[in-house]
Length: 323
Image (cartoon, rainbow, N blue to C red):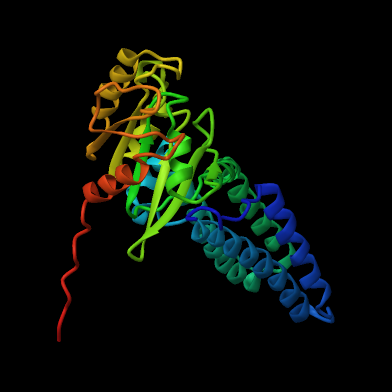
């Protein structure tokens, strides 16, 4: 998963404590016999602290994935959850601090070599460094909160994907379980009331995924907040074909008119082709939709899956470069 390897982002206080403890140990390792050895000890303290801080800050920035290279699906989700531009600005502030600390350390080492008392100059340098790290404490907290949110996103790739939509109890989860892994992975999104069910199956050597969408595509869009609507838009990046399941028997608890109204709303959000399938044909013979099936008996399920695969867009073939 793209975000799962982001480590915990330490606070400014944690970073300073770590660097100054190491700096103190570095000084203890020096034998102070004369002015030269005292200067070397003070330089060692300053460079040790500065190197630890600049290295740790650079590590924080490096461990976040390049936002400009994120797949569109994850880029949009990251924008929904934490704000891409905000994350860029906070990462830039942390990077600036690391570079500034390294530059200051070089400057103050030169000053120490010209000073009568290197310890006084080193303390001045520590004061400047502490001020810089303290100034980005808010940035560090923002990035740690962003890290905690983004790590919760389940792994969804942008390969051949069927998104299943429709009201609750129409048979969406049953379809996912029948055509994919016996126990689909239930992965919670921070902006859904329930977890997305992500199942996988392989056809002709190609791995496909099928996504049930409880909490997102199962109630009128006017009832949703802006975050949910953006999340639905993000799903448009991975949904290569949409299966909309209808229950004509209305035993799901929702009228047929209500179900068709939701279908019209979702169609305005997705550019992928739709397959409209009437489920529960074992108890209802209503002639509606493109196909019919029964997820209870399994009748028609294979045919629906085959039709969905036929509707799946063929990925573009990359031209081979010949010498």
